Each structure stands twice: as C-alpha cells, then as structure tokens.
Image 1: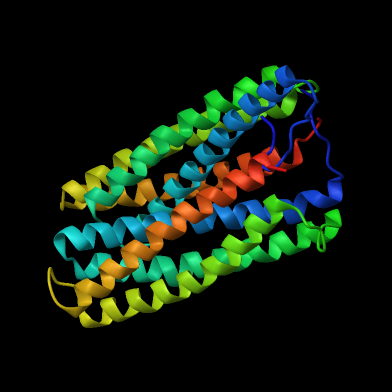
Image 2: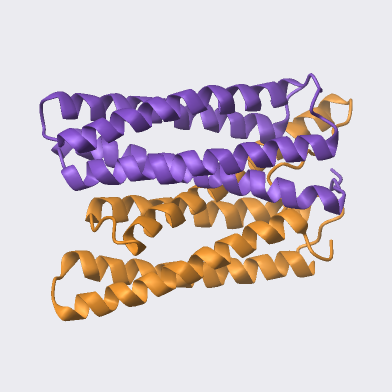
Length: 156
Length: 151
C-alpha cells in the first residue's frame, strides 16, 4: 500500500500514460477512503469526550467507516500487487492488514457500545459507553499506527 | 510501475502533514454533519458541537497540516518551486483558513444565540453549513492534486 503522497513513475507511451491514469485514480480513491476512516475516528472522539450522544451522528460515523475501511483495504491491496518493489507478502503490508483488521474489530465494538448507550438510559448503558470509549481510543491508536506504517514502510 | 523511495528524513514531516490534513477534513465532516442536522431540526447541543469541532478540531488540525507542509517542502527543496499541484495545495490551504475562521465565528455566534428552526441563530448555522461544505469540496480537490500531482 503506497503512501498517500507518493507519485507513480510515468512513461511517455500512451499505453503507459493510461496505466498511470488508472493507478493515480485508484490511489486517489485509496487516500480518500483513508480520510473517511480518520473522519470516523474524529466523530467517535466527540462521543468519547461526551460532547454528543446523537444517534444520527453515530450513523454518519459508521457509514464513513464502512466506506473508508473497505476502500482502504481493497484499493490498498491492488497497488501492492501492481507496483514494482512492493509485494503483498512484504512485512509492512501484512502488518498493515493485521492492524487494519484489529482496528475494524475495535471499531465494531465501539459502535455496538455507543449504539447501546444512545438508545438506552439504564445503568448498563453507562457501562457500555465506558467500554465503547476504551475501544474507540484503542482504534484511534491502531489507525495512527496504520498511517505511520503507510508513511515509513518499515522494511520496504 | 515502480515504487518511489523517499529519504527517511522526509517521513516525519510528511506524517505530520498527512495526519493534520486527515484530522482537518475529519473535523470539517463532523462540523458539516452537525450544521446540516441543526439546519433540519434545530438543536442547541449539536450547534455547540459544531462550534467545538471548528475551533478545537479544524483550526488546530489546519496548523498541524500547514506546519507539516512547509517542513516537508523545505526538506524536499520545494519552497520556491513553481509546481501546479503545490500551488493548488497551498492556495486551498491558505484560502481555506479564511473560510474556517469565518465559519468558526458564525458557528460560535449561533451557539451563543441558541439554534432554533428559525431566527438569526439558525441563519448563522446555515451559513456555516454552506461554508464548511465548500471547504470539504476544496480540500478534496487538494487531496486530488497532492495525490496525483498533475503537471
């Protein structure tokens, strides 16, 4: 998964230009998906800080993760196969996929907890909210780790 | 298609720049969501959240993004470069700051006056919603320029 701001190599022939166009387009979509993932983290942070308990905002955050999470994975694996110098079995790419999976599961737990918290008012909802907040901060760390891996590409 | 390799010394400034940009857009999406929901239903807590998202999220992230951008540009020797993708990025970043400040002030006034379905508070919130939506579009154009680096 190349880093967001990396430029692909261009060649003069029309065919290679069209290949570069496809690569650029997919890379752009991959980066936009990553922005959606971070937007989810920002929205959930508002819940974690107790600034809101609005179910509609929670739905916005969940939708962004669904689109961004799938987009980063699918559109990230493709260039890893396509670009010379990267292989899908490179340590940093496998590590990124593992961290992505961990972040997704942590996010699912945070989503379940906050959904329970905004739809119920009993004491159990407070416990669910506390657990969801913990899961959210862990997911935030996982997303930061992903960004660090994408930038530094350890071992590449 | 060959992988590009950056010197290690560029990585940290670039990380700050990208992280700042992502947090900035995230804060703008949060603010836009709250302003649009307030526009439809009128909610004082959501109006306050939108103001906080702009003040504490968007403004702080903008600073991180811009500092990271300048640091990266100096590392790469691009401070005086005349590149269209760099011009697009810096123009939308600097022009965007003005809009961020205006939208933050409007959101703050709306939060103070209280947001109902009608009245001056609601009008301010609607203006903030429009400005922040424009900012998101402008920054998506920036992301396109930074990612694909058109000649």
